[in-house]
Image 1 (tube, rainbow, N blue to C red):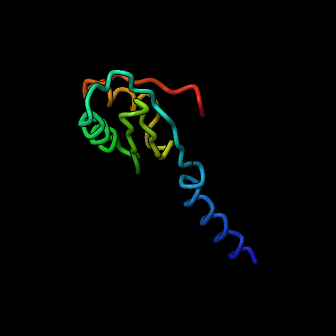
Image 2: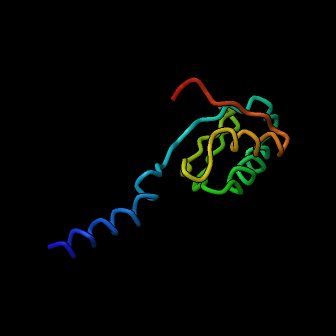
Image 3: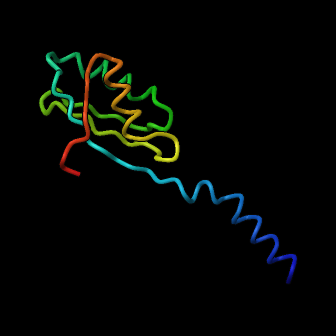
Length: 95
């Protein structure tokens, strides 16, 4: 019984890092998009951020919806990526 308890404890400890991580989706407002090709540049920049699994960018709505692992990155890194690509962004109010 002690061996089983110890084994269970080790399993929980080794998986603790994954249990704390969460997939998160945010919407960034990107007001400076001025052409139909801008979303491609923004999407590529966002997908280069470690932890980002999906980025959908809409020229019409001037926004990007980003799915990411919050243990690997955060909103500040996402906005830095769009800013570095020439498109400043900020977290949208609607979440």
